[in-house]
Each structure stands twice: as C-alpha cells, then as structure tokens.
Image (cartoon, rainbow, N blue to C red):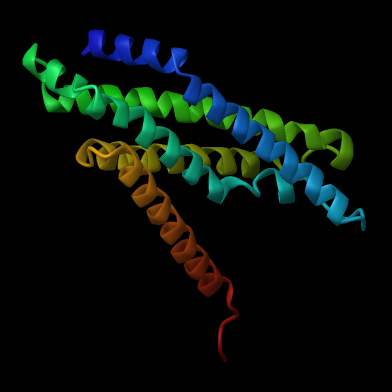
Length: 191
C-alpha cells in the first residue's frame, strides 16, 4: 500500500491538471471576492459573506480533476497492471482516495489563500474563531465525503469524459437539493 501511495503522490505532484485546477480555484476565489466588493458598494459587507461564497462550487472542480486524473488510470490500463502484481482493489481505492483527498485539500488551501485577498478591501473576519473553525471543519468533511464519492464513481466508470459529465451533474443536483433543504430550514415556523 505504501508503494501505491507514494507512486500516486508522486504522480499528482507532477500532474499539470492538478496545478491548473489549484490555480483555477485560487483565481475564481479572487474573482468572487473582487466582484463582490465592486458590486456591493454599501460598505456593510463582511469578509465571510464572500469568503465562503465559492464553497458549493468546489465540488465541480473536484469532480473534473478526480475524473480526469483517475480516468488516465483506466485509459493506460494501469489498474489492471496493479492488480496483476498483487495489489487488491481495496488497497488501490484507498491509495487513490488518500491521494485525491490530499489534492483536494491543497486545492482548498489555494481557495483559502485566494480569499485572503479580500482582507485589504473588506477588513478581517468579523465572526468569532469558533464559528470560523466550524466553517473550515465542515468544508474539510464535505471535501472528504465528496472525494470518496468521486473516486468511487471514477473507478467504476472507465470513460473519462462520461465520468466527468456524470460527476458534474451529480454535484449540481447535490447543490440544488442542499439549497432546497436550506431554504426549507430557514422558513419561519407557522403559527
């Protein structure tokens, strides 16, 4: 398992797709912060309102990256070769999962660093540290769950493009359902 993990970690760090995705997430977060500041000129906006604005969309970045990254394993028949030399499917799944989870966390670090560009424009965070810690922990747990789902789908579907499209649609459905649930929870109680 350690050989699988070290090989996958080496592969992800050399992947141009990975670094392009990290840069894209960082640039999108910078754009969201800058756009939000330009649109809302009233001045009563806090950094938190725009800092976590991209949170629902990170799933799309993960879906594209993971499906294309692991789809290469199918197209190059690397999975078959790994099974021939004695690795089990569970070992391969966990090595892929841990590698993609590390990649997703690095993407989120780029996202968080990109969001810090809003500090000169909006000031520092106004929420207490406990609330910010809850935000960050929930984002990391969301990342772990979504990465597990994406890795599983990518290993089941051998077609890179089909896997990417399916995962993007799945993430959009999850975003839609979660916003419907959130709106339902925010409704006032009926008397």
